[in-house]
Image 1 (cartoon, rainbow, N blue to C red):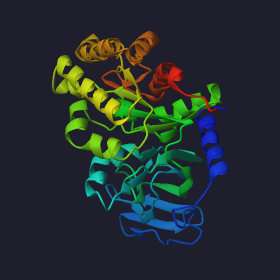
Image 2: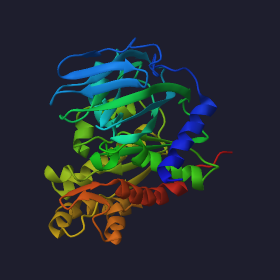
Image 3: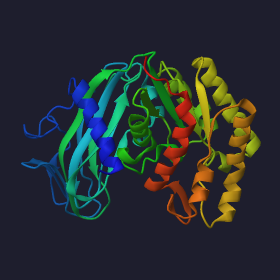
Length: 370
């Protein structure tokens, strides 16, 4: 059994043990097309319910193919399992979009297009992707949509979409809540849910720390830099006002900061972020992380290396645990951990390496159940 299969099995086990209300109506499509919106056929596309499930088919290049279900009612501080199963010769994407009528700004700064959006690779076999979603204090509703990727003709069939309530997310003294904060290197929104850092860390906890109860939340988003998090109300809305409990915070910024200011300013911004976390979540343990190493590209490594060194320096100054992903990638000695010779974003293998480093850093901070 592969690591991805093990993770999927753990997710399914959790759902079976704590299964509750199913929010997606007709998520198996056995009742036809109700209540799905945007269905229909024309010369460019075909989007309809078939005996196999929801068919998304592009007949003409550039045609938009999408199916949507609105008005999914969420409960505050509740855990949900968001999942999709399907196959096709063209990739697709599934998205969950939480909303708050009391705070319209929440949906904007949440950036669900990175957090709760999952690419579904082309596959000849049925494939399931699943995410544990904490509704937090803000979200009270959501909608979901599945979209056919690309521009060329092709199709994808979804056999099931689910948003199932599995239990409460209110503060529990026996549970450790681990929050990841950062940019695209942290969220890796270009990878399926099962290949992201949260799924891999949850798998490691299940295998190596069976006596620990841990929940992972990732609020990293593509393109973000630390000062942006602090100055756009995203920290306030998505973290402070939305998450009542954070026990461990793993911070991994630097790549986008480098484009805007020097290492000293970066260090100042990270220091401010750490101070905010410690003020709003007394007793929180903070872990700082470095970014990727790009094999065979000394110019890139030098350019971004000053930011990674700033993170190391701050960790040393404040006695924070350090997850040195850079050194792990460097030790690998190949381009396998990244997406390409000029793209230092972590590959699926690179996220596995990062998970090893981060797990060792957070392991002493995880509390066993009493």
